Image (tube, rainbow, N blue to C red):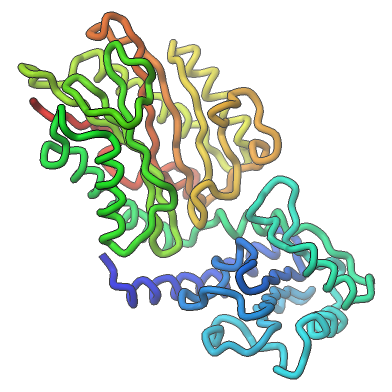
Length: 409
């Protein structure tokens, strides 16, 4: 585990590379001449944290970051707000303390003469919709209504979803932090059948993440299903022999999120292995994971992947649902989603976004299958793995995704 100082250094190393190499490439690909990201203290644009060094926690008064790419390919990352030493090496200071942010922006636009200025307004992507009405109106007033402001949705999504080679290298190490915790709590050392509750396991996970000095990006969910049970997700229950216990967990480190669902079977007295019907259902879930990721391809929409995956699952006799989502800088991040839990047909908006290379996803889905040992009762296998899509192929960040844990009585 990295120290706080090491985490900040890695964060800033990644940011410097992203600003210097990724940003101008994305601006060229998206046809962006100027992108303005402006925030006020405690009302920061969601993108603000993705654009600043680790020790910059909030916007200082009004912080205006501008990315400019002119027709000759000259790129600049500018701080058009009060000087801040922590921006040195990342942004060129472009406003004197005596200036007003909005006047300085107007002067910059007049000098650069972009045909359009991209700002963070979006109907579909909340992370790309961080420009407040007040700040927008002040920009319009400062520029005398003479500037064509347009949505930065495309480049904002590309910035959020695209991972550098260094990030893809570090991501599995971050993922392992969460998986080690799951291994610890999904064991006989932590779970005592007849005593431990699913809520106890939730608190155990939270405590261990907290001990690393990291946050969970959502409160862990731990539930169970059992033969004769009332639901496939029973919360707040005492864990008993014969139960399938399931968790949904995720943490944040170096600005990257993880998202995982894993299962453990609690053995009955005399059982030396997981019942065959439960193992078969789990293997079917892994098979559906392979079906879905097999349709991941650059340029393909989330809705296309959903349709193709469900068609193949149906042809193979699999009762399946997909609700995969982008992940990275945010947990439920920007980019194409492959179905929603309550929508397995066609997802407007972010279901129509297309896949790009060097992006990451939570491969989140479930299958339902009858278990003979449960008298033919259905079991639902809920699975989720954080994966990378790079070089046109998917890559798991952990080698244990095909293992269902077993706690022997």
